[in-house]
Length: 241
Ligand SMILES: Nc1ncnc2c1ncn2[C@@H]1O[C@H](COP(=O)(O)OP(=O)(O)O)[C@@H](O)[C@H]1O
Ligand SMILES: Cc1cn([C@H]2C[C@H](O)[C@@H](COP(=O)(O)O)O2)c(=O)[nH]c1=O
Image (cartoon, rainbow, N blue to C red; front, top):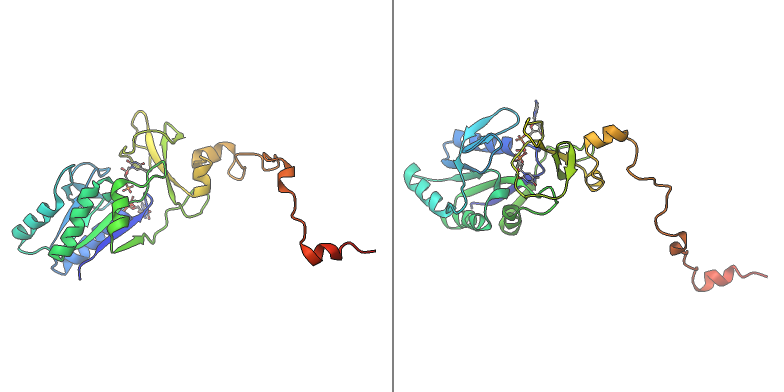
């Protein structure tokens, strides 16, 4: 039985690499498939992996009907066994519904790859719909790491060296220096460092071990934390002669 599978995680955790590997493995066994993407960092109509692999792909423009596309591909190829869809966070929710229909009515496997959330920690529309519809959701096994060594769970946007939390949801970019002005980069962080806006650059500036605030300063008055009185027998037990 065909499945809709959502492979997700942060940026730089190997999604495009896995997408290309899965296409390779299925095609090598004679299965017929199509490969889709949208706004890849390397340009239009291509899937690129930071490991250096790349492959041409169909660009999923806004309003493209993926059900119609799959039906046409089946006619042209003679059969359609699978669909690889990369950067699905950018797809419209309706396009995710169309992919689900391809699974259910054409019995075609759909393997979807995309980041879960944006630089504000909000789910992307395409990813949200996949969480709602997928038969299975899999976190990528290769963990992208925060500068502190913990598993990275969040994508930070860094503009001209400073982490930002305001701006357009979609700004295509990379986790490395692209040389553009303003320079928009992304850095994956653990939640603790995302919340403290502590990028690797900020950590280097203040010293990696240093906390961004003084833990000895207590912002809530100590009187807030009055210890509870031991109840019943225990409290009377202390009232000795
Ligand atoms: N020079 C390298 N040597 C080995 N692995 C690398 C190298 N550069 C990148 N990678 C691997 O590629 C992963 C990123 O793959 P990619 O498919 O581009 O990620 P995603 O699509 O999730 O953003 C990194 O997490 C790392 O494991
Ligand atoms: C967090 C975040 C990312 N993007 C863009 C940046 C990249 O072009 C892609 C993710 O690609 P990857 O293969 O997973 O590295 O998404 C964005 O537009 N908005 C964001 O908030």
